[in-house]
Image (cartoon, rainbow, N blue to C red; front, side):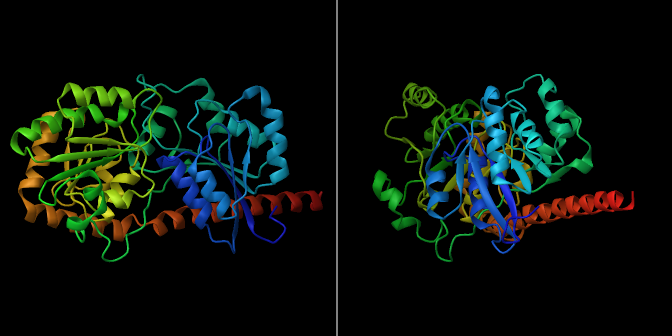
Length: 393
């Protein structure tokens, strides 16, 4: 059942290897699972990206298998059999059951699936036919927030014992690399021509409809009436055709020269170290890595009360929470932070301490490693029981 050197082989599936929250989690798990116990392998189906290059440089095996094409499932099953995983952990966000069907046909001893969103793609919040098979064939379902766990229970009808909540985790920056430490000489301010005295607000999130850029731009336009020297940085990848929509709205709001809509930044810390305030304006959110990274850097945060955000941010203690889709409330919270530096610093320090105590990367890694050990023990016990029955009969 194990790899030839005695380690347990964990096969990860993620559709794309571009930079995103789910993709980064898979990348980081494959990179950092304890190598004395686990042998990680990654498969992908749709788009290559920087995370794939990073995995290959680190020596993690990466294979392309067309799990996005049902007609090619026999090819996928054959590929999984060649890999011979002990556990198949699918982080698929595709709306089909190809992953579990392939894992079952390949006779993988343990299949785990993951959920990373609150079904923003399903306004009716109704279980889909393909989900019945996918859930029936899954041993455990991992979720990154209690909010997603509630959705899996209520919409998909999955029992509690099948759900495992493992919050995302991030690395704390090296001492002295927090945002508040070197803000005045930060490179991002120099690159964009933002003076040390200008309030700088930032948001790291891919340009997608549910990410709330529209709300943020409208709120920032209001904020400029009270703080005309303020500037805003947004950065991230883009759903095809969506960044131009955000850029058009910025022009419509008269924000040229005051808002910087950057593309994906691989070094997010480079941006965070220059900020006075981080804003998470998303309409829906599973559990944001970017929000945690801002907190880890000690940046004061304002976030919407959406999805898993309240599990990371305690209103008034580690940040401020506002209703999603409400630019007036978002503007008021941003102004409150920018005009009360003592409060902002206190909340920023408390946010960093929260990450230190609850949301460091090693917490997430331990959670997944522990789950894998449980699943492996369960399959070993089942195999031993079956062998005993065969011997007895």
